[in-house]
Structures are given as C-alpha cells and as structure tokens.
Figure 1 (cartoon, rainbow, N blue to C red):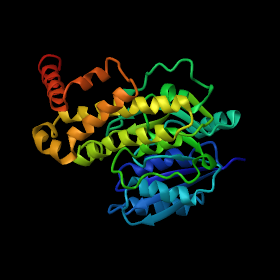
Figure 2 (figure 1 turned 90 degrees about the horizontal axis):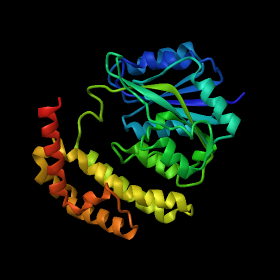
Figure 3 (figure 1 turned 90 degrees about the vertical axis):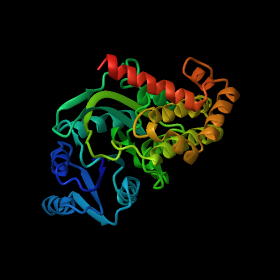
Figure 4 (figure 1 turned 135 degrees about the vertical axis):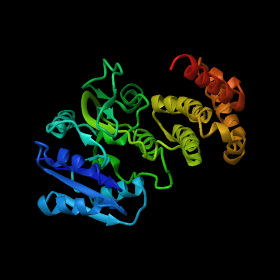
Length: 330
C-alpha cells in the first residue's frame, strides 16, 4: 500500500490548525504520515500539534526556530518517507474524507509524477468567497507533458498545496528560503522545466482560507522584489530547457510576469510611495529587461503592447482605472 507524506508548516494558527488536522487524520486512506513543522510558533499551535502526535502515531512533529514557510516545507521534505508527498497550509483544510484516496488513485492509475486538483476559497468565518470555475475542458484526467500541463492545467495558479508530487520526481529540488512570497511559483517552474508525467483533475479537494492578517494581505516592498526575481527565473530556465514548448512558454512568462508584477504598484500602499519604491527596486532597469525580452523573443500581443508605456505612466493609468471603478462601479 503506497505511503503518502503530508507536510504541514505550522506558525501561530491556534484558531485554525485543529480543523486542518481533523481533515487529515480522518482521511479514508490510512497509509499516511502527517509531518507537522512547528516553525517557532508563539501561541498554542505547537502544543496542539504535540497533542495530535500523542493520539495518532502517524502524526510527527518537528519544532524548529522560525525560518519561514519555505524552510518549514524543506524540513518536511527531508524527513518524508512516502512515495508521494503533498503540502497543506495549517490554516486550510481538505474538503472531504476521500480527498487523498481520490487524488492518489489518479496518480497511480497514470503513474504520474504530479497530480493537480482544484480548490475553493473561504474567509476567516469559513464563508465561501471564491469558487474556481476556470474552463479546463480537454485536460481533465489526461496524461499531459510539462508544457501542456503548465499552460492549460496550472493556468497561472501556482499553489503548491494543490499538487500531489512523486517524491523521486522532486529529487534535490527545494523551496527557495530567500523568498518571502512567490516561493510556490519558483518551486513549480523549476519542477516543470524538466519533462514530467502530469495529470489534472477538476475535483475540488482543497479549501484555501484567505485570512485578514496573512502574509499576502499586507503588501511589502519585498513582494515586488520577489515578483521581479521570478521574471529572471523564467528567463534563466528558458535558456536551460531542452524542451522547445517549455522554452517558449517560459520566455513568454518572463515578459508577462513583469506586467503582473508591476500592476500592484497602482494600488495602496505602493502608489503613495511610488517614487521612492521606483528608486529602491530599480524599476527602470527591470522595465528595460522586459522590453528587451519582448523584442528578442518576438512576444507581441495586446498585453505586451502595454510595454510601449513607460512604467510610471502604465502604473498611473492602472491607478486611474481603479479610482474610476471605485467611483462608478462599486
């Protein structure tokens, strides 16, 4: 019976971690190890983890000094003994008791290196705030190569918690501990730079909780720095890949990611500090790299036409759209 390692980084989530763990220990598929990495919690999270470990021998707890999400996930990978592994954030939970059973069956039926499922979002009160309705007809339950999978199944949603990975396929790859955010996309684009056997299922198995005080709710300047760093990762991997489809897609993403990374600067608190931030992150040089790549790789479409606008003008146009939307639509 195939063993699955479930890796759960835990940090100051005493209000939510029990709901998460209950959804894991009650899975119908029983051959699991649940690896809880208490990343220096200062609330009761660590004690809650220890209580579950005392009651269920499948639950293992690692207590470590705070090192961040990537550090905690990497610690879990190092000790994982399952053929497959999957990540869960400790304030989230799985939809039903057969979630793992169903996704593992798909992995084994296709001998897949990775399987990706779907998710819904809820707020702090557990109220549904977003249901994924992206049309992915044509890719459901089919064996896909890395390029097709990245474009059509991931479709820009690089949440590592939605993937069941074969551990051998991950190999020495680890999460970048220098990144504050964007660690998922960094990990995934490196994983899919090599050819993989990939399967997508439209089954919703994961519930993502969008908390008011989560790290992604309060933008910081390092959010921008990490986002622009990913542009360079796409570029570098495109040069290393022997897969023409991956090479072309990563070249395209090295340009489009710039436009997505710039967009938040049209919103507060970035916009009020635009001139200072522009200097601090070196926006002009980042912009010139994006334009150079668009020309070099001949990436010309309606989106990349926005590169004709200098970044400060582009940001101000976006800001004006936000202001008008708030005035006349909301």
